[in-house]
Image (cartoon, rainbow over all chains, first blue to last red):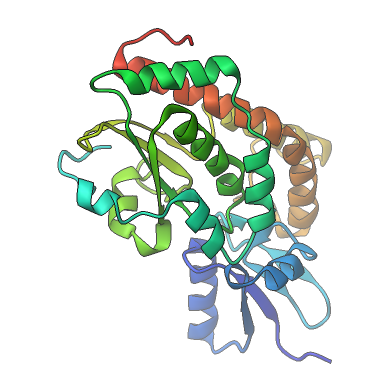
Length: 75
Length: 211
């Protein structure tokens, strides 16, 4: 079973930057997957949601966006 | 555009990508760029208008586009700009937003807080600014706001709920419902963008908005 969250991001997405800055400051371990780098990762992200950052927690829960900062649509 | 000086010189403009090169270098959404390019929203009257505008001595000769391939607003609208440029003999050059922050800074939206894309900037042959279009039309923005309010109401959320304020417990369903309503509106939103670009040029050039 996966032990750390996967987070789908885009470089230049303000909400993504804020989320990762927060997690880095808190020492949260995560696996970042950049959706703008490959169609396969973008397609994968689209199965979970429409707005990055998309967090897929180890228990399967999915979160989109970040604390009031508008994310980027990947529809 | 608030500032009077610009980083967009004729030389800088020529460093932008042609549409075909932009699509070729895109790592995502190439199928959608090609699909939307094939399905042009321009009417014969639209084409006549843009040709007439381009024929004026101070008319539009260049279109600068700020874009990133992952963005749905970009794959929806950029092919239209390519069609306008082709139909009216304008030179379209595309700059990647995240590699050209100095250009993006000249065209921020939302009171300077947002780097919304696409941006289409119309210039004269000498690279003098005429007007610009950002992201989606005012009509599409209004429709998005109305749909957002409707979805919030159906989910028994406060009517002022937005992406920013939706409670975490409702966020997934809220976004899913909203996207399901928005996506079918894309063909009309493209036509509304053309209408708005015509209106912007008509106003800036002081010419009637007809073909």
